Length: 317
Image (cartoon, helix red, strand yellow):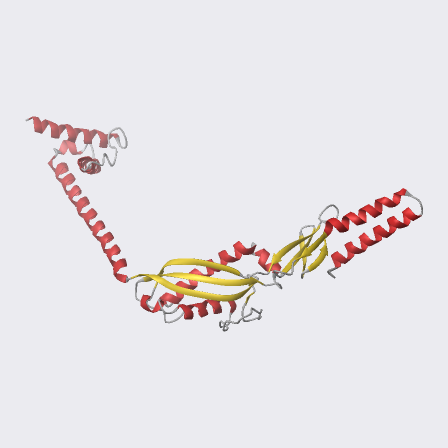
């Protein structure tokens, strides 16, 4: 039986209740059944075993407040009014967390994809820290969030000399050691047959875990030429778009200049530009890009209609 104060107090209460009940029954009163049944039920219902295989620890909570961590063995809990003494069990089992980071930029251009494997065990001396970080899911999310900027800084040289994308392919062990130092503040120790917690060497105090191993590999090379091809294609598309807009502006200006001076006061060059853009879009099968008639400035809409009618009149002649 665990020697924690909560288990000991509940145990003594159960023993006392049973003894009192038996004593009252011996004195010939049936009221002795009450403490006898109460003490027996509290013991039978509240008895709980924290596993030793796999090795586990329990976190006591009293009325929802975390109080103490206990090792494997039998404990008593009473998660009901008015006591609310409960236990939350955690297995100290090695966890494997694998994830990928794509398109890591490298020194001199180019990029790589990285695959990372973290092996860790919850620190039995920092169970409350582990739970504060929302347990396994929260810890692994923070590992991934911390790894991404660290690896990117390593690759481009923000925290050192950096690596080209060719060098990154063979730098897995070096990057693994740098990540270990980032999380623990020390160099990664050599692999051992049996894991042993070593404060200051493999513990991560802010996450409540002990690291077992980190392994980083880099694959999926994306050479600089590919990135340049994408950038050149986008630049070419933007240049073509600018040339098209310049031609449309010139056509609109020509129409505007050909109008009588009296008609120029009825609208603006902007309405003609929109009309030209829409006409090109309709010819290309895209439909109207901008609705002119019936919306916007009434003078612009009226003048756009005038230009359209004037062009039709010239065709009839």
